[in-house]
Length: 621
Image (cartoon, rainbow, N blue to C red):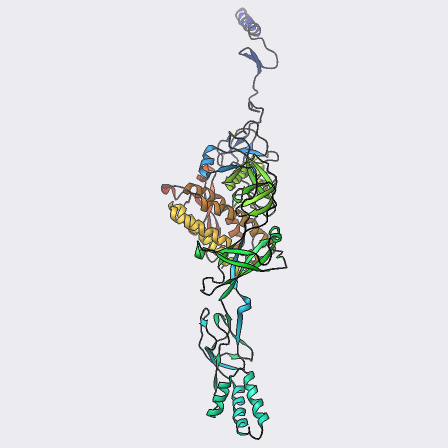
C-alpha cells in the first residue's frame, strides 16, 4: 500500500506542476510569438480573409460542401474550393492566365466618340420581279398532246412553240369558219363573228387565214409563248386535260430582279424611298452594285419585328439569281452630332430581351464583371450604348462568349442567367446543373436527388419532344446543321485545321439558313433560345485560330445542340451522346456522334477512344 501511495503522490505532483508550468484556462489557448491565439476545434471554419472554406469535387464542380469528405457522385476526395480574390464583389469573377491565352481574349477601352461609320447595313436576298412575272395559260379547253418545254429554268422567247393541244371546241370553231367563209358574200356579219371568236382564243390573223385558205381543219393546235423569260414552274404534263384559262407554265422575266431587305424597328426612321443603296453578294466578291429603294412595306412583321425594304436591280447579264443572299449598305445616314459611347458588335451578347457586355474590373488582374447595357443605333460593325457603360470602362471585345461561359461555370451572372447560378446542365442528365449553388448550400446527396435549378428561359435541364409538330422544311434545315456539326467533330478528331475551318463556316451558314417562322408556339420559342447560343459558339469556333480554341467552343456548342436533337429528332439515322470525363480540364464534356464507336474530338490521337456512350437518340423513322 505504501508503494502505491508513493505512485499516486508522484502523479498528483506532476499534474500540479504541469498546471503551473503551462498555465491555461478552459478556453484552450496557447502562446505563439508573444501572441495569444485560439486553438482549433478540429474544423476549418474559415480562411485568413474570414471566408468560409468550401469543398468541391474536381470531376463534379457543382458539388459544394462545407466540410471535407467524399464526393456524393463519384466518391473521390473533395478538394478545397477556389476562394475569391480579395476585394471581389459577388458579381465579379477571376479567370486564369491560361484560360485568357487559350481563348485569345482581348479588351478595349471605352471612350466617348462620334459614330464615324454612318452606314446602315441591311441583310436580304434576291427575288423575282413580280411586275415582270407572267403565267402562260391555255386559251381553249382540250388535251395536251405535246409539251416542247419540259423543265424549269429553261429560257423561252415570245412566239416560241410551247405545246400542242387537241381541242374539240376549236375543231368545231374551225368548221364554222369554213362554212361562214363560203357564205361571206351573203352573210358578212356571220363570217366576221366567227373570225372574232377565233381571235378571242388568241389565234392570229395569219393562223385564221391559213385555215380558211387550206380548207382543212387542224386537230392539234399549237400554243405559242406570249412573253419572254425563264420558266420557273411547269404546271401541266402531256396527256392532261386543261380548261380554258388554266395555267401551263409560270414564266419570270429576270432582266430585272428585286432585292428584299429586312430593317428593324429602330432603323425605319432612317430609310425613305429614293435613297441609294449599295449591294454586294458573296457570289461576286469585290463588286458593288447600286440601286435605289423603291418600296418600304407599310406593315411590320410582328414575328421578326422587321419591315421589308425593296430595291430593283437591272439583271440583263443574269448575274443575280433568285434566292441569293445579299447585303445592302445605305450611306449618308444623318448623324445627331452628339458624343456617344460606341462598342464593336463582337463585344455584345444579345438574348432577344437583354444585351450583355463584360467589363474588366481590375487593370492588373483578369477580373471580369457582367454588365447589362441598353443598345442604341447600329452602324456597320458598331453599337451605340445608351445605358450601362461609362467612359474609361475596359470591355471584352474578343472572346466574349468564352468569358460568359466562365461566368456560368462559376455560378455568376451571365447572358442566360441574369440572377446568377449556372445554366449548363449535363445533356442526357435532366435536372443536373454544372454550376455552383448560389442561393445557400445544399447537402450533397440532396443536391443529387433534386438537382440544381437553372433559369427557366434556358431550359437545359428539361427534355422536350416536338417531333410530331416539326414541319418537313425545318427538319431538312436542321439536318444541314447536324451534318455540318458532325463533319466539324470529325475534323477535330483528326486535328485537321483546314477541315475544321471549312465545316465551322458551313455550320454558321447552316444555322443562318434555318427559318424558324415555320415553327409555332413552344417549338418556336425553344429553337429561338437555343439558336442564339448555338450561333454565338459556332461563330467563335469559326473565328478561333487554333484547334484548341475550336475544341473549347465545341464543348459549349454541343450542349444546346444535344437538347435540340432530343426535341426535334436527329433525322433518318439515330445519334449517340458521348461523354469523356477527362475533357475540359477534367470537368468532362459531351458531344454528338453518328457512330457508336468513340471518336473523341477533344483528345490527342492516342486517346481518341477515351469516353463512353451515355445516350441514344432514336431516329424520326
